[in-house]
Image (cartoon, rainbow, N blue to C red; front, side, top):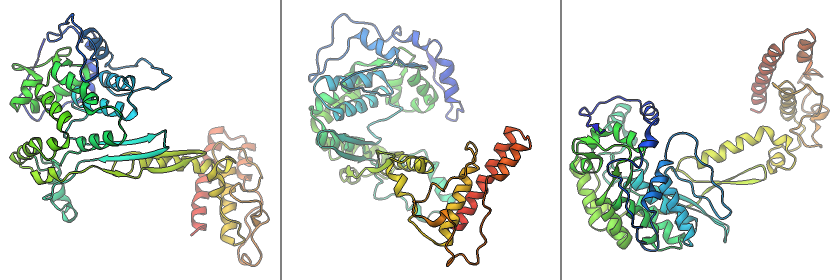
Length: 450
């Protein structure tokens, strides 16, 4: 049963609800659609890579369903991607003698074919890579680049910027960096020929693959957009209806482009026919990209973000990529409250204040002890503050030369908690009291360090 073309462009739909509703019988539909007839002959090898036969391909696509996935284990390497055909392409590269770079880039290129809603040639590609032989961490930045004529957003007011961000023409199209990142990464770290790494993507674009539920849900939600252009109707529609789950999706024009890229590389994508036609297409939709913008693009190598967590090193992708810098900062933040209890951690010593005799340091150590002994889950104890070294004089109070005018705090700061428990209050009320005391102590500690 085909899905009809959605005529209106302002369809409002909860995508996740739609996909969840469609998932029930989706797995059974894969492999029995009208466009997935099996063949008896095994596919011929392409540039050293052997495609899966029809039965194997349908079995792989059938696992692209919602819910728990099958666990995998290996002594030599594991490849994980959001589509099983892309994961299989990566594993095949390892089996052919390639390294992790070959596998990652093969999966990325295959994903641009089998999951066009996730990544495309007109998007970006960045890669954080570790070379075990040299111990080197590298990061290739294949982000999109703004054209020379891009509006100056720095001097825009909020209304102007909001109007710019809501445009649906070609104004916000940037120079794609996917191919630049792919080519730079493969040239520096890859072991296999470019044609071999791209062979799975070319095969699935030319011979097709079965539509899985997630892809069909994205097609349905965007059907009003896909139905506007003849080339997208040819790919995603069968006549006037959307192709169904289990039907084969063939992208012949994309296969031709990938073939040219495997042979000519950036000379075709940025400086050749593809670059010129891409710029013309964007300009015809009101965009700003020129052929000169395309020809000037270059991916570049950047230094990864590095940090520590306990005795481990943490390496992440730098800005403008997402997540790497935030991950390092989060791990440092998680570590800091516990660093005083981890004697083997580098930060447990480095983060402690140096020995001091002034009032401010004494107040800081005292308040930290108070916050810790009245925290939510800790047991009141009269131990020396864990933030200090053994030579710190805060154990005996502030030095007389610097604290003559400062009254000494109470000797025991855990008495309120003990008295509340002795009075028979509930555990919940004791926890609430502890949280409030710890919060007040934290504010006082911050004030003392100013």
